[in-house]
Length: 405
Image 1 (cartoon, one colour):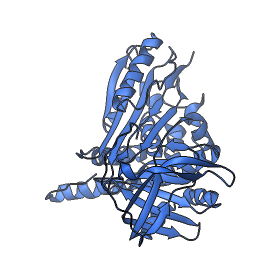
Image 2 (cartoon, helix red, strand yellow):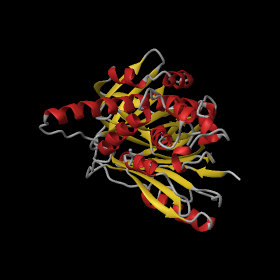
Image 3 (tube, rainbow, N blue to C red):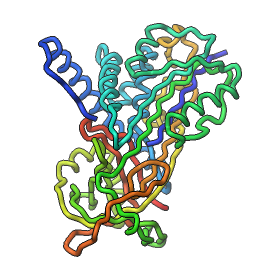
Image 4 (cartoon, helix red, strand yellow):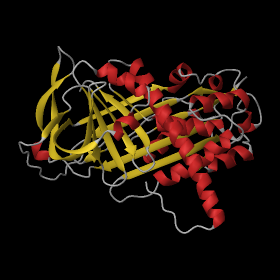
């Protein structure tokens, strides 16, 4: 009977590089690291746009929050145990090249990127945790375990022959790593499971310029031409980088967090939401960012909280990553045997936005902002798209669309 590799993915919510004087050898190593880092970042940008466009199209009437970055990290880790066409298909699906040493290069690039992203910031918190829950009675190849160390994977022995206890142990780990935001991720564990590979992302961001809670008021949100609902609308006047993207009819505005992160809101004109969604598939965000300029505006965006759960097996098969889920999968780099396949992959993402910043639990703190009459109004009173980006690394960690409160 086949043994199944059970893989799970979860995240809650979103760096600075420090280089001192380097020797000639260190400079060459730094240049090599930079090249591999850039390769991983470019692949992430393409995959993020493609993955979000796909799930947004799959769920046209639903709010969506996802972390393509987390998907990419997880399946890059899996590629370390894949061989042949299975590995090639994973790397191609993640928009990485498949030349010689491709998996090693991706791994080294991620090692550098995760180091950058995990650097501490006293005001905004980002925590990326990777874990391998490994069946106690299964022997894993040393080469696979060594490869996972580049992803800072924590190896945790577990007994899948007692599935209820194993499920609770994994769910407790997820809840702890996401600061309580993601609970009961797993509803069951198969006793034939040999491993659960897990990636968690937790982000808590504090707005650089907080909204004043006293100014939040109920306002109309136009779900469509026929549906109007009330939402708590935050407001603030200030200088924000923004652009109007005339080609698709969209206002694009950056709302910075303290530290190295920003949220970007794409607010389509009425009736042009689908045009903006289509543009995202073509990797439009970097081009839109180039058009942004500081402008004093009245910014009005709703407080909101939402979550999404995805069957990644279904979504990734649709995007061309198929073999790893099939009976023809070659994951022999994990245990040395070809009796493994990826039986399940799940992602759950949660996001909450309020006057203080972004996290799942509501908080209240703000800076008084007096609304004047000379600033342009930017009002997110209709469906919009948003993303959370690490600015120095140019990595989009979360993508979402908000359609209906």
